[in-house]
Image (cartoon, rainbow, N blue to C red; front, side, top):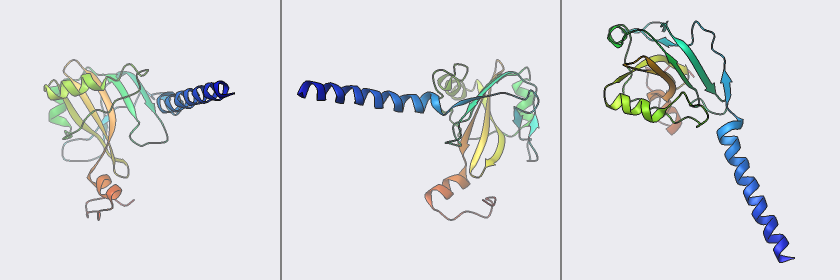
Length: 170
């Protein structure tokens, strides 16, 4: 009887572990079909509404359980020199790791390119939802990565600090 209970316990633990792993890595993510026209947008220097840039090969994933789960990748033929003159750069952004099955988004490669000044991070859209900014990194060879970051207002809201006057309404 003890062997049966031990086997049941081990099999149950394995099943629960696999279930948790599967739900975190696969179950809640969904592929997003790009619309082909407004999937990649950057905020102009000086503010204003985000503007579309030329892009292709767009792929994206997201899940409803977290505003930080959004990941996308694309390619662009626009030069970094033109983009840096036209669009607002984003400071201190760090690419977030994506599930291994979403192969086009390589957070390590994007982070290395940013650190080596071979990629520039731009503001995609501020407060895409309260406290969350969408950021876009573009490498010298035209490879692009999109993810979402908690902004200063989000940091304050989530840790309970008073919101500044520059924070939008919730």
